[in-house]
Amino acid sequence: MRLGHLAPGAPPVDIYLAAFGRAEQVVVRKAGYGAVTPYSALRAGAYTVAMRPADAAPTSPPALTATVDITAATAHSLLVFATGPGGSLRGDLVTDDLGAPEPGTGRVRVVQGTAALAPVTVEVGGTSTPLVVDASYGMTTPYRDLPQGRHDVVLSGSTGRAPTQVDVRAGTSTTLLVTESDGALKSTPLTDSAGPEVKPLLGVETGAGGMSTVDSPVWLLAVLSLLAAAGAGAALRFRTRARG
Image (cartoon, rainbow, N blue to C red; front, side):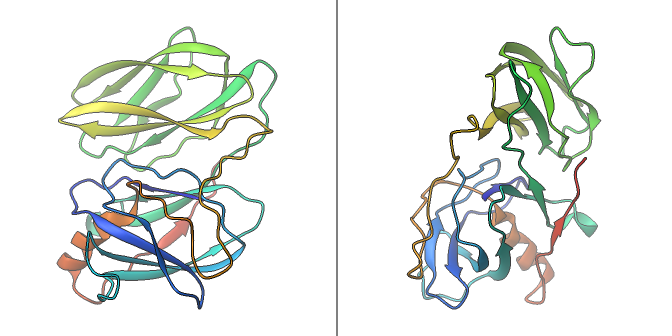
């Protein structure tokens, strides 16, 4: 599983993870908007996630705790958007396709992570059909096969167009992450699968109550501002969507 924070405008947090009933360990420090962790391999089972303000003492009360269930032999991205009621947070657990595409092609999908510049259209040079047209904030598209090679891509949003390029290698799966930076569209290609023989894993659960530490920015941080606004009774809801 990997984790992505796609809700702008919140302070950084440190994120802790523990196998259910075991001691927690910090896995992410100073999470920020637009960041997505590498994949981490977890043993199947229940895990507790806790968040504290960045650099807070590990013994301090967490701003939020949640429990997630991990299923064996699956790959997922937990993406957090500010798309709940009244702009509150909502987590989408999306399935990442690590299977082999057609020979000579790679799979590409779009995750639309900008609210201010939505809707967003993503066009690929040399193809008659865009990857997505007028994608709303929080949308994850299905994968689409593209021929191997470097493709010219144009992002179009409410403030104009942003040209970029995406390298597609045969046998791979890629997520094109769309975010906002200084009022402009930004795209970041994320490798979902580097090929059928390559496992996209980073930290491995030790079985002794901890995880390998992953000091890279990531996901749920906007929860802090949500909790501050909504009070101590606020809760984070995870919703799994079926993606066609």
